[in-house]
Length: 212
Figure 1 (cartoon, rainbow, N blue to C red):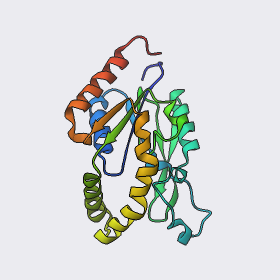
Figure 2: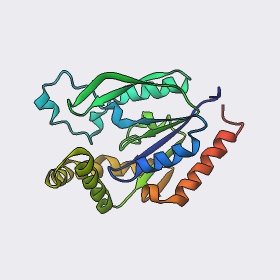
Figure 3: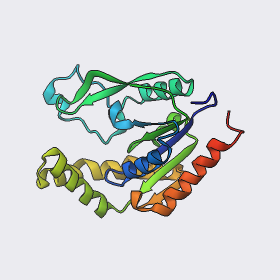
């Protein structure tokens, strides 16, 4: 960990776009150096004040579902080389857990999530903004596979949620943030050329003496 300002990389994209694969590809290159991943999903708002039935109605694809103020505060703390306590979200109870994860400041901060480019305050903290752009048919197939295999969902419930919430929220809030990206990566983690170019750019910035 150096004393210069950490490099902040924002990676956005729709559900199932492959942004996590891109994040992991970049992380794996720099993991022996000093890099940390901050997932926007950890920053869903605390809903302990709501009845459980009310929590079930939460639209997790809407910007208001996230505690963006806390996320911005934590990024600013990391930029000051101060550790933070990242919240943990309990998906079974649909609210924030009492547990936290200590995150130490690093030279590279990767901020990953569907809406990390939606808030101008977050964008202003980023040095590099990426948008992972993948066709809708691939995204829904990946989401169906994930939710059935990992979350025990039925195909009907996944499709219903996609049509009623995920797709309209993507079109309204996620897709428009593409215009803020410095780099658009088609097909996510399968685009090795784009990832290699991104890795080279990050190395150049980290090795530059102009970064303070």
